[in-house]
Amino acid sequence: MKYNSKINKNEVMRLASLSRINIDDSEVDLYINQLNKIVKYVSKLDELDLSSIEPLFHVLDETIIGRNDEVEPSLRTEELLSNAVNTVNNFYKVSQVIKGKKISK
Image 1: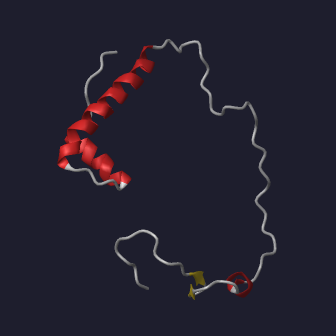
Image 2: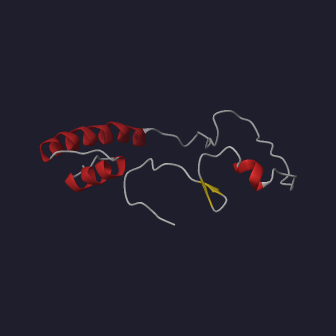
């Protein structure tokens, strides 16, 4: 399969935004080049003949045995929240970790 460059400035900026990374305009070309090299390298996997390989859903050939979903007695809300530093309407209230808009309720 022929490799076609798919990473452009918009894609780099979108990835940077999703990753919460600030990229200067002077760095964009560097990232475009590096990401295109990575995509080209990984695209070599398309050349492999995997027709005789069965799909693998888990590294270990094991079956996950779950338990039945049954209602069991639980702690009362007051007991669960008794050691909480802050609570609001029977919920734990924690300090803001990610900067952005604060939701007030």
